[in-house]
Amino acid sequence: MTIRNKLIAGNWKMNKTSADAAALARDITSVAGQRTDVEVVICPPFTALESAAQAVAGTQLRLGAQNMHPEKSGAFTGEISAEMLRALFVSHVILGHSERRTLFGETDGFINLKVLAALKNQLRPIFCVGETLTEREAGATLKVVQAQVERGLEGVGREQAVEIVVAYEPVWAIGTGKVATTAQAQEVHAFIRSLLTKLFGDVVAQKIRILYGGSMKPANAPELLAQPDIDGGLIGGASLEARSFLELVTAAAAAK
Ligand code: PGA
Image (tube, rainbow, N blue to C red):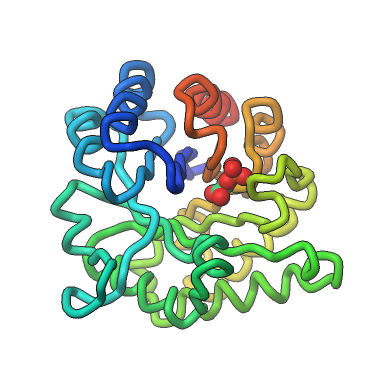
């Protein structure tokens, strides 16, 4: 029995109109809306946050955004601030997703600014790290993950660190159907927890949830979620339909 409640987060990426998102959010809340044994977060695109917020109002479901700009306001065409997200009842924000890192050139330094800004504004970062296939094959996985964790969390204080959720997402497993073996995933999760212990001390590190992401599906979830340092999942493809997403929530509850 661990002190960490499992967390299942759905990353809807660039999918769902506002109306489609509200419908999916309602389907999820109708089944899992009152669950407290697993924390459930849905992360629709910005344009669907308002309709999704209405759909989850009064339930236990939490709302997350998929990105955020570190500045408060100003001349940043196309960007969204923490304050804007808070006004839509957003509580979590995915930061440093590998698609942001590789397709949009986000650096560890820029992601670090976002993490600090999110915490300052009472938003809980879902901070993503993970190696590419080339890096894994070169035996550099732990080194890469260590640099991402240390640089991304620079300047975070101990009291703030408990608010952070880390997501380990091997880039080669995202959307590919190739899932990390439980041993591969657990090894990196335990390593991340050791880094968190060095940064924030054991008491805090034991409270921080570390999610696995990358082709997590109802079929492979139970084994992954049973690992001692895997505290939930960041789900892409399988979060776009209520049925598969809800099965993952059930799997997380059963894995306690
Ligand atoms: P996937 O995506 O579940 O479709 O692999 C996970 C993610 O990118 O967060």
